[in-house]
Structure formats: structure tokens, C-alpha cells
Length: 180
Image (cartoon, rainbow, N blue to C red; front, side):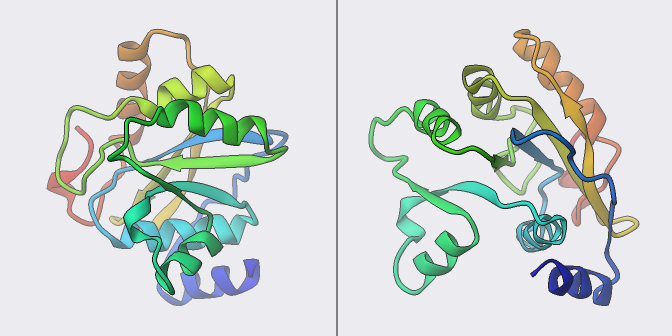
């Protein structure tokens, strides 16, 4: 699958950064900017090209046959956002029950510009005691990959502002909807 994903990315003109996470078995991955549905497809192929199995929390409503089988096959975990569930605790359980897990989040929560990021990824990283990998997609030069590793300090606002600043240098498919 790695070679096939690399082939597809290359065929469409994408270059994935060669900096592969090394020695980190569990992490929250913050992906940005998120301005297009294509981000998911390109990002998923990039993770496959790295050989990294990722998990994605996806609303339960999308898990109907055959779509549900496909979503589970690519790492989707159904969550019911309508119920009064504690998704943070559910995600932490996933970290605790897996030896290796990278859980991907797009904290913008929308493909439109959103200055108010969802903070769940941050609380999951803190509670699961795992680092945060910042990952990017940059349509301006068709590159993507891991930007860097970040250890949360506990200062939510300061840490999220730092992550935003780091990822704001990359341009989404719709740049005006990107991170500012």
C-alpha cells in the first residue's frame, strides 16, 4: 500500500516530506489547514505512504454499508456526537488500548475560515499523555507532511496559538479559508 500511495501522490504532482515520525508510537496529529474535502484524500494517502496507520473519529451517521466498511478500513472510528458522550475519554481509551496509534484531527472543524479551533485534540493529548504532531498540507507547492512534534504545556491558549502560527505558513486549496 505504501508504494501505491506514493505512486498516486507523485502522479498527481504531490511531494510528501520525508521526515517520518521516529520513535513515537502514540500521538495526536493536528492537520492543517483544512479548506477542502480533498485534504482528507491527500492526507490519507500521505499517511499510507509513510506506512502509518491512523485513526479518525468520524460521526456514526456515515457508517452504513458499504461506506462504513470503507471508513473502518481506512481507520475510521464511529462516534455518536448526538449522545451525551465524553468523546475525550473515548479517545483516551483508544490510546490506552493500542500499542501504536496516531489519531488525526482537523481542529478548524470546518473547511471555512474558523478562528475558534475545537480544543478536544488538545485535551485528548493531555489526558492520554501523548505528544501532538503538527502535520500540514500545502497546495501552493503541492507538499505535505509532518511539520514537527509538540509537547503540550497545559497552557491551552498559548499552545494552540503556537500551533496555529506554525501551520499558518501553509496554504490550503482555498487560501482565504486557511489558518490566520
